[in-house]
Length: 567
Image: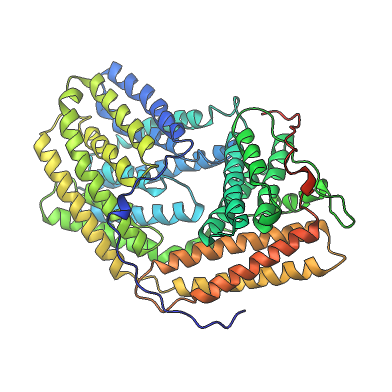
């Protein structure tokens, strides 16, 4: 491990304008947008026909589960969506039972804050998202303040469960038409980012940010492919070979043809045949194409880390969430608010990996909500034309929120805010001015109190996590270097070592970035992080050359054949 002197970490200036800057929309923004409309519309329209639109809040709780898991392979998506529906039902059950047993607002806020903390920790530990815990917290917090009796609880839960089952079917509906769609998109993203990094590196303008982004995309592609633990198909094996090529490009950018990587990415993103990568060099000592994926099979057989081991590092975030949500709700109650859960949900939505990101989310939330209440005031006359008009406005807001939120959170919030306000009108219309005023006040209270709680609860373990990540990179690098130098190393061992080192580098960068945005902590070893990354990248390049995975330079500009695999 390097003995480089740690450099002090300066507190980053709090961004305002930068937090509102728009980015590029997601390539698949339309999938969650269309899915949520397809999940919400049938139950809501059925209730309109039955004259029971007052029950739509419960069916919408289940329908919103259609927002989850769009990036996961369908085999994994089926399980994740089922767990999301069960998690939603669990939080809803606690909220409904609590609401039926007490009307004490302080107790209700306390239960809502504890639920929000649990939902935040579990969603972060399992990486369920976007939209992670925010939807679950909105559902459970809102229903806490709806008067209930114990006799009504089973019926309301049954409505939510039925809508959740429909949302599961909506989420799984594309599987017969494009069974490998998520894997294709992740592979294409890995190839594109690898091509961009190789292009800058070959031009002599290598960027550490581009390299980190490329390694993260390749790692995400592996996670997507490995998430399907069923028997690998021919198409999935072809995709794995392409991700291997992206990984090789990161380790040896000078020997990479970016145009070929982009051509592969464009072909993979479509619905045609998966491009054929061709065999690596067949020089003496080369492992050959079949041996490339030995490490993949070994990694697929490894069981994931237990949930409890992933929850430990999230304790500061969970405490921040519980404290911030509770205080925001209490302050809202003290100000005479009728719906303190708006302040609670605002606070819950703020908490990110570190304080700097939490501040940015607070700015985005406030701006989005303030613009959103103006939109609500504009569309209210249309929404109040009748129950059908109200449902159609809710559907439009659902679509707009998912279509825009990928560009920036505040832009999506512009549609989320009128959506939340329209949901409160499902049982009956309410004064527009009162709704707008309450929402503005609760937004400001939730943002200010929630961020103050984040300042009070510091994450002093961030530095220790960086040290552990540095140690993990050093150990993975030493193992990979030893195997690369050993003449008797097996293909499986080399593949596992290379992928383990790449994953450790990605984790180190994510851990260091998260820690750098945290306040009130000791100086971080930034120089050691940079040196460890550089040494790891050199070892990855050496491992790739030892495996003989580099393509023949004479074929880089002509090899674009495809193999006969199903889309």
